[in-house]
Length: 226
Image 1 (cartoon, rainbow, N blue to C red):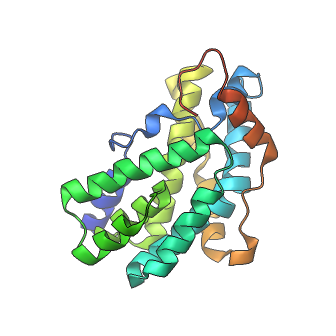
Image 2: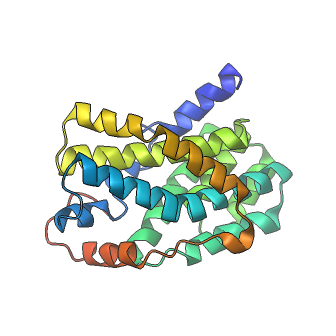
């Protein structure tokens, strides 16, 4: 990858990107509350299962398809996959999370003036902009290769999960970095899966995660919004 594209990818994947990712745990806080995740071993098992059963088989493949659609400036395909992603958010928290971060990143794309008018028009046509849609638009606008954008999204997601574990179990900082480092082969495998799945193979079927998310909505004590 060229240096410019790499730097753009690092910016998009950075936890300092002001879209509020740090305020969501994506069900992990509820799992910690119930004792399902309680140490480094169980944290790694949780993240790997979530990665391969949900993110690699639904969220990342949809991002991959949105990257292709934006590169072709295909409004119909952008709308199709954006609407499908929103429809698949099966709890109030998961839906609000994706729409809030998508809105924030979409606004950032506008404020930074990084997209050409045609890309911007496609993005702003969407009534609700989920995070993968805004991320795909930003990556294409910044000329980040699609394969790298998917890997960056996966790493950003895993880093946020690791940070939740560090703060909420809690794990030590070294344990958190060891956890993140151990996920490298899993992230590489997930990126390959995301690019290979056919449309009919996409699935985010995870009833246990959905139940944890719904329970988190009424959890008495919590730090995160999901």
